[in-house]
Length: 103
Image 1 (cartoon, helix red, strand yellow):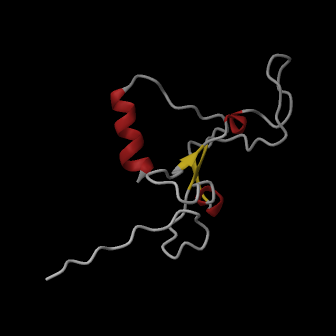
Image 2: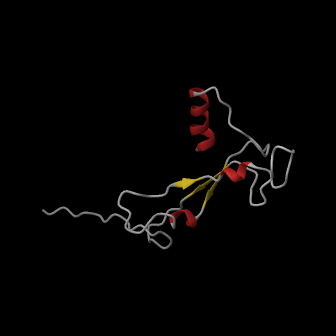
Image 3: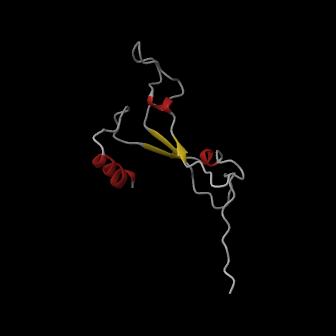
């Protein structure tokens, strides 16, 4: 969906071209339960939907004298996203309860 709908729409709205530091023509969306764990317990209206690390844009070793490497880098455009968790197995946030209509 991102490649076919979202990214083309963004390109039409702006003249900026997306980066492609690893030359693969892709953006990695990494779904992980660790993002779910970042939502605080009892956080009303607060939910961590995802994030990115700027370190992932750096090479893993020094490339030039002015560009330092980062050993923890994935050297890719990556977005870390939450996973569906209806049973709250990995989420700290309780699910909204369904309200029943009284008849």
